Length: 275
Image 1 (cartoon, rainbow, N blue to C red):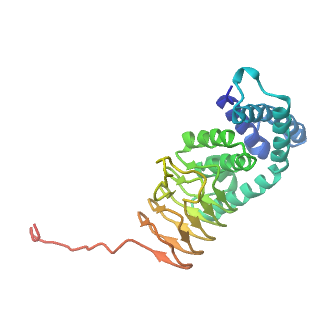
Image 2: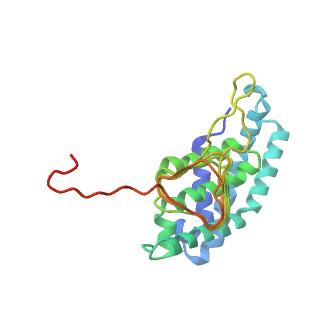
Image 3: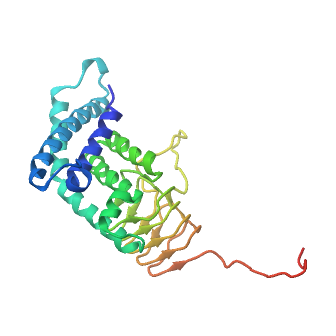
């Protein structure tokens, strides 16, 4: 029996309410009831997540489905979810830094609450940061189901295996793709339709695709990548660099670089000249 997509989606939505109860929780929630509300939701979500984690561990074991989840698998799942729960305050801190980066980086943002409620990039990053911890706990199926929920809702595709530091901002966001082994430093900003992808897929002697090797870009601190840029392969974009729109990049970039397309030739014609 496989983990339930519906259950994992519900858990993700509940955990986001736990992280921001007053802003994203029940509309009638008051400050005096916040602790009880968070405690109830957190317990419900973690119990459900532990059940789904046990199903994934059972699936990973290759044991026939009819045998059901074993006691050791259930105990292992509970142990991993306790670790996940202990990391939720760190996730909240990183999300706060992402929201601050969006507020500071977008002149149209009127408040941090507007960023939290309205920005698809923040929505996608919330699910990613939760899913990344599940991925780190060797629960990749749960993690992928969680990020694909955000992908379907925002058009932003972040693999849970990617490593993304704090202060991350995706502006507009539609069409952004971030691959499994990408590494993104602090205070990085991406615009819509940016791809951090693989240049090629390595095969073994039998022609089967190899997995679990570094194949996506490393983006260092304070880099800005503009709309439509495509960065492929295990290249490094040096700190404080700016990558222009629609650039196709497959080589390293030194720190403090400014990468643009070749200049466009613009000639003005009159009275039919040049036809």
